Length: 213
Ligand code: MN
Image (cartoon, rainbow, N blue to C red):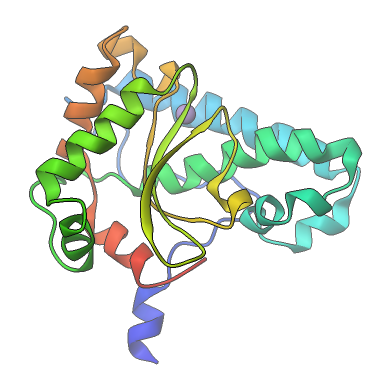
C-alpha cells in the first residue's frame, strides 16, 4: 500500500498546475521568458478555452481531463473539437512540466533504463526520439508511450491530438511546438531537442511507468 501511494502521480485537475520549480530553474536549457509565456499564457489559454467549452456540458468536469481525451468519441459533438484541442493542450502541458527538473538529465536509472535497453540503450533511444521530434512537420509532440498491448513506442502527434485518444499511455514527452523553444533556439529545433535531455526528470518518468493516471 505504501509503495502504491508513493508512486501516485500528480493529479491533473481543472486548474493551472503551478510549475514544480522556479521559472528560472531550467536555465540555460529553457529561458525564463519562454517558461513564463509557455506556462502562464499558452497553457493558461488551453485551460481557459477547455473550461469555456465544458460550461456547455458541466457534468463532464466530473471526469478527469485525460479521461475526456480517452473517451473523445463519446464527447458531445458541439465541444468535441474544443476538448481535443484545448483539453489536449491542458493535459499535455500538465504532464510536460513534470518531465523536467533542475539538475535533471544524466543517464537513466531504474525501469526506464531497462525499457530504453529495448531501443538499443539511452544514446540510441535519444537519437530516435530526437529524430522523430525533428521530422515531425509543424506543431505537435513527441512521446514515448505504452501501447494497449504493453509495448513501448516512440510516436508523434500533431497539434494537441493525444496518445490518450489512441489508448496509449504517455511515459515521456517533449513539446515540439515552436512556442516551446523559439525564443532561445529560433528555428533550431534539433538543438532544442538535444539540449532538453539536460533537464529530463527520470524520477518522474519512472513514476509514470509504475502507475497510470
Ligand atoms: Mn507547448
